[in-house]
Length: 126
Image (cartoon, rainbow, N blue to C red; front, side, top):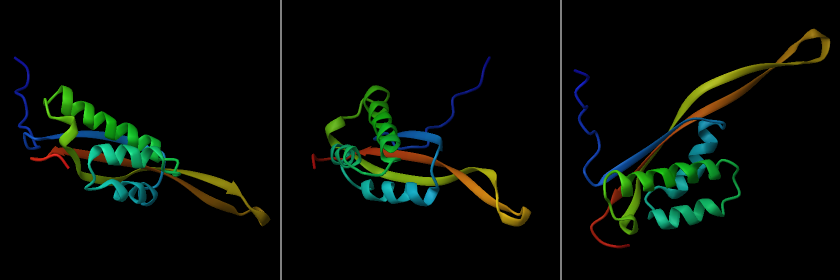
């Protein structure tokens, strides 16, 4: 028996990669992701390679995964891919405490984020 396969939520010329629990805040991750939105995948990988932000390496891995999904699972042309969507969401937040003076505590929040990248094949080479 088994389940019937779900309908494909993306178009035929799109592929997606998703990463959960990236160890940074959504605000910092969005700074990196907003730089690559709309770029061709080749330019986006080059931009992330030389970015000075720590989380750029993880974003690059997710982008390369989306490119590999497009090539291997959906038979899309790698040279014509662009970063169509890049959405950032909040994940869980670890709460830690730091002792402060006079018996008080300071709250430390360690946020996590989720990242969803969609690459799309365009009609012409950019």
